[in-house]
Length: 199
Image (cartoon, rainbow, N blue to C red; front, side, top):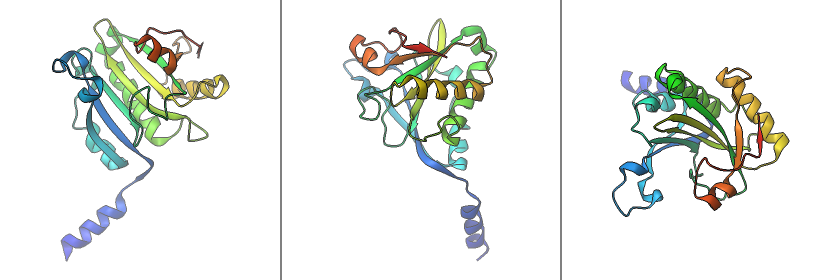
């Protein structure tokens, strides 16, 4: 009887999120030969409560400890972290580049956590329908966090970008560059694309 009450109390104590979110991981450099990017993408967890989020984030490597070329992708459940997904095809992403010195001081992990919390807390997007997810990418010379949006409408995107900067508590010197997924798909590159606008 006592254990049943405890289960009921724990169920009532959960903090549900507005949306379900899924975490993915990939590292193309470590992928077996002749595998596609999609085959290399690994689903880590899906969470619908704050407790499930913390259970996941407290039991995975911090982003700074991923091998070079490693990526975490945090997206709304049902949206895959790829340009071709129907929710992403018309959109783009803000990219924040981080110096390795900042990553080594723990800023990269802090900014990735703040981004994740702003995503699941849904504090950056007034409409609630503009954001698909975010990606943190560990590279040899610098690291990046990208915030993926569902469209390229400048005014709406700039408002979200400004709220992201506020969530990260970064200075006005930090520049977020917006690139379309269509450009990325055409070039085959995630980051070396034309900048549409900046925040």
